[in-house]
Length: 114
Image 1 (cartoon, rainbow, N blue to C red):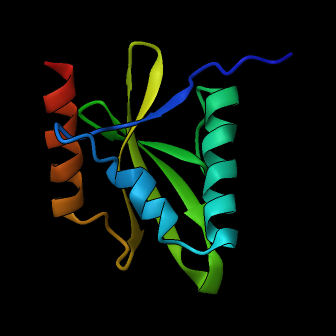
Image 2: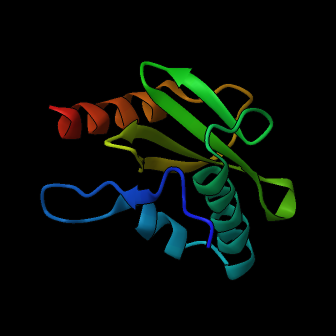
């Protein structure tokens, strides 16, 4: 049996909402499966580099998934206590990762790392 090197867990707000899980549930099944496979690849193969994973700096990493209709999804995570904490996720609309998305992920990381 192969063990996950870096098991994924969902970030939860103080009110116990899991924004990344909720975002995934809003996607169609095909897109959910693709993103899930990419997360699993990172869980079992960590550390994983490009084209799947990339460091965003400040302790943040992204999983890069190509989903249906030529769209690109990103799941931003941090490594804490030997776990991949899924902090934020979005479908990219521009080349550069939007500053607001990075700031939200950093805010969530600071919240759980303190």
